[in-house]
Amino acid sequence: MKYIIANWKANFGTTETKTWCESVGAKLMEGSKLNTMFEENRLTVIICPPFPLIPIVKASLPQIKNLHIGCQNVSEYEKGSYTGEVTAATLSGNVKYAIIGHSERRQYFHETEDAIGLKIGNALKAAIEPVLCIRGVSDTIHEYAQYIAYEPVDAIGSGNNASLDLVLGVKQKMGIRPPKAFLYGGSVNEKNCKLYLENPEIDGLLVGSASLNPEAFCSIITQV
Ligand code: PGA
Image 1: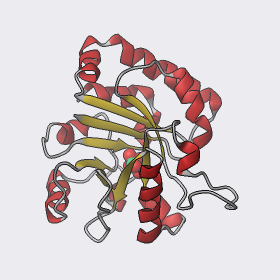
Image 2: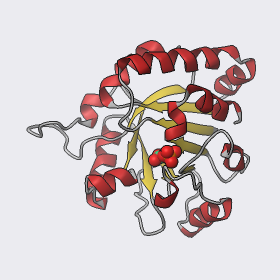
Image 3: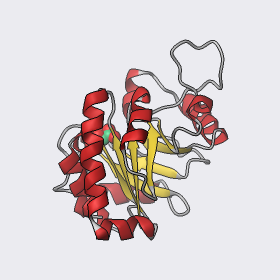
Image 4: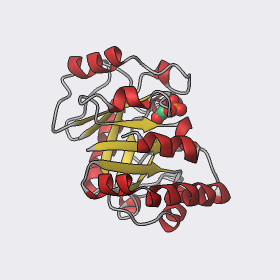
């Protein structure tokens, strides 16, 4: 199974979301090779929009096996008086996956490994599968996270995607092996995705900027 995850970050409003879903939805429905990939559990696509756009994506995309919705964070708190937080319990049933510990959250929102551990626990309790992002070998591989996305900070949003050697080296050094899935993210686009997709050691891609463009994103999906 290869996983392609779209991380929209803090982009898009209602109109852009509907346009994107129409375009991507049509493309996903048209290809018979893609249909087979989804049906035979060879491809999973996960769209991670900002929270308020989740129901719009859900309503606007066609129902396809192995096409799922995720979120980009969950609260470290289970519930209660935490104004502005969105808990895993609230998200339960609305998303199947949650990106957790993204480097932008570690940097701008000061997420610690302890907080990330709590988030993973809360997600799992709410039947949401965490996708743990790590920046490199000094980050913790939390035991219960089955999906690990390696995203070197200098590769994110820079156009400088990491070399295969670096990606595979980190996987090996950190001892990441099945049943954990190992994904790469950082300046992945329709031109460089093949490099990673062709490698049996890499189970998928976390795509930021290129996921905002329906053509680029669909091109990545069709190269799986
Ligand atoms: P990028 O972002 O594809 O724009 O580099 C990836 C990410 O931060 O998940």
